Figure 1 (cartoon, rainbow, N blue to C red):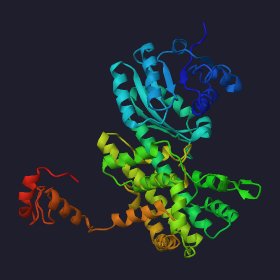
Figure 2 (figure 1 turned 135 degrees about the horizontal axis):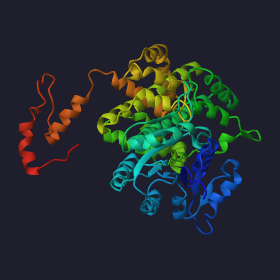
Figure 3 (figure 1 turned 90 degrees about the vertical axis):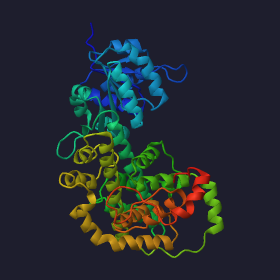
Figure 4 (figure 1 turned 135 degrees about the vertical axis):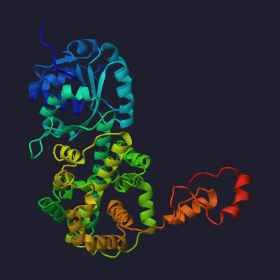
Length: 482
């Protein structure tokens, strides 16, 4: 009788294949499954086995009964499937074949609330469930991804040593894998990771837009290469410089790509979740909206023909722009970690922000020197903005930040995230805001009430206009809540 496999992986797409190869390289015996769709998906797992030498000992299946039977107890099954209905449909077929104590792990980009529901449903059936956020793309999955785990703590204890083997290792030789809480905690952390990623990408796009207005293509690439030798070093900065190297003939290849950005939903999830939590994750939202605006190509061309005119040449220097970029990135990271802290209280997750940053410091798309610094700072700080490092960065770069904003406005260059970072920072340091006007307006038209500056309790009061409006309100009934 053949020895049964330690892990089963379902879904042999790019990520499933790369993770399978990673597991196999670590000596873990695998059973691989991919559905059979005539004329579309046939012998997929077998073809991958034949293509990659490290998968030669893996067993391959196109039917679930044999796949499940090939696994040792408790069965450990990692799903690398499209999120949503495809995963639901697969689970409906898989779960009846399993036994109590078996473990299902969802490694897809699943919304954390879906993971919460699946966790509860499977718990009732005696099946242990983990939602695992996987970052690093195809290369990371093969050579060491960042793994963000949530769900059943008992299941994590069973699989963690294997996950540690395939995960990236940070500079302190710790695996970039951690358990962040029950239910959807792991997928929530991955969602915030992607929100930070959206803004990091947009910031680099804005840097490119600002530099290209008065700099040659080759000089832009050289500038980013030099930046990546400083404390600004990061994976996204590195690959942005690398992709600018490519040309088709004498033409930069980047100029052959349509300027319409796509998205797969995680940025929208992160933005919407910030709203749900009542938190201003404004850079994530600005990055998402920048992608949305880019999709209106015909309208942008039409408006360009209608409204464009001679612009003031950009006056911000590369040194000033780099300081603006560094400060904007700091605000972006601050917002991401603040969102995690708020969610941890809301959902009763034991999130260690230093540990999150450590998991994000290698193997993932947002790995950077700044992320390594965050892992260190959160050991003693509750907020990145109170750190002496940020205060020093602000002291040295605030004037440059303002000049970049001024130059971009005068040159009519759109900078969604750099401007959003500045607006957030200035709003956060405003001790007396104009929100009292909002409260007065709400009370005037809707009798929603407010707290006075000398209030000794949480009892809401109404303004002197309330008597004047009371008869109208009685006639109209309840007003809309705004």
